[in-house]
Image 1 (cartoon, rainbow, N blue to C red):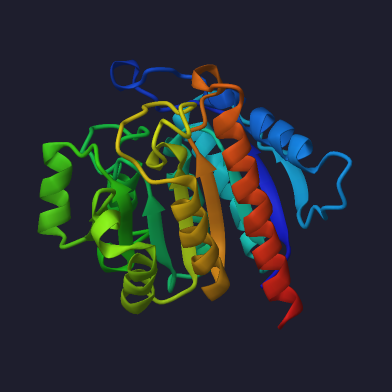
Image 2 (cartoon, rainbow, N blue to C red):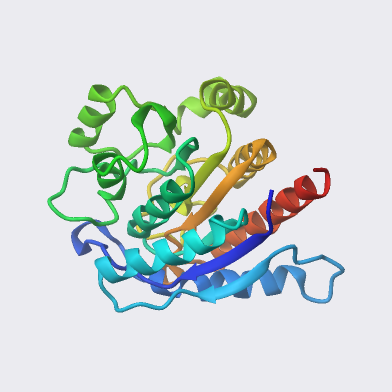
Amino acid sequence: MGLVKLVGVPFSVGCRVETSTAIDQQNAPLAIRAGIRTLTANLDIPLSFEDLGDVTAKNSVTEVLKAVEDQVYEVASKGDVPVILGGAHTVTLGTLRALNRVRQDFSVIYIDAHPDIMPHSSINYGSAMFYAFKEEVIQPDRTAFIGIRQVENPEYRVLREQNIFHIHAHEFEGMGILNVVKEIKDRFPAPYFISLDLDVIDPTFAPGVTLPYPCGLTPREVMYLVEELCRQGVIGIEIMELSPINDRNDDTAMIAASLILRICHVLTSKQRTH
């Protein structure tokens, strides 16, 4: 397990106005970093990561994906763990292209209210995973969609036709978080790439997202899930789709910051034991 490197991706490329309540993801890295500073100010809390700053690119899907791919590849090829602060979920395709260049034996754990597998004619935040399958940078049998609850009919067809494992948010109640974690570990070998869209969390807790949808997971469920997967081994993590304009008292940014602090602590502790 290498060093943890934060990478900001301040772009909202690929967002569709017809399916967004706010397009403000370009401000997410700034808000998350402010949250980290607030949660650690004047406290003896180690910041167990190196912040590489933000990627720079022209504001187009193609240019941003290439910049993300280059930066993630540079980090991951050295054995370090990129932690992406986003940003529109479109950029996940760039991350996956990079990780696939490093190694192919990882599992994708996509924690999101939406599976983002719409068969659109262009790459956007609702089709990034569809194109990841199409480009074969990931495989359906190594992919899990966790916490989904706002799924379009074409996406359900892809899930059925490709026999892709998924757990709806409401199923957490019956299964319990321990069984959810066990199911993922049993079905999908580490290392993991974890892509977390903050809209998987119920908007009661996390309103500051691009497309809030009710009946989501709790922050504690998400924290436990991500932490347990990190203990198994990860090659990359994303915290995506924070839209500060939709936030309430920075609640969602603080949840994102808390997740990152915990993730970095777990990964650094794991490094020290190896």
